[in-house]
Length: 86
Image (cartoon, rainbow, N blue to C red; front, side, top):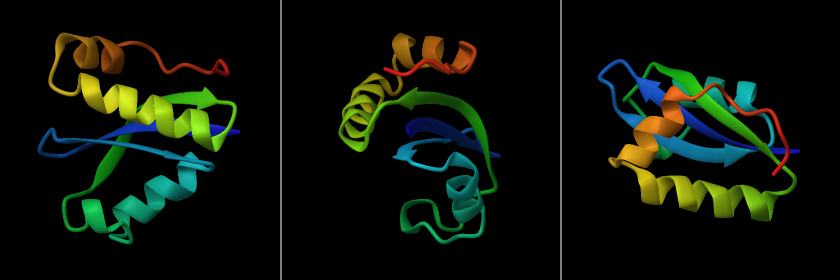
């Protein structure tokens, strides 16, 4: 099982990613082990979706990234986290 997730830092900036273990990945982000978020945390998990495989996770991640800054992105992060497999 894979996940697509959205993180928010204390300045209100968002990061969208995908992984197979959200808890460990969040720890990596907050320990500055992820180059793209290094020294920009701490982060909190605000949204996650369960998807069936890594390919689908990357596709959904790209789709959500295309929403960033739009009404669709704001609507997505305000909705309750999804637990269904896509």
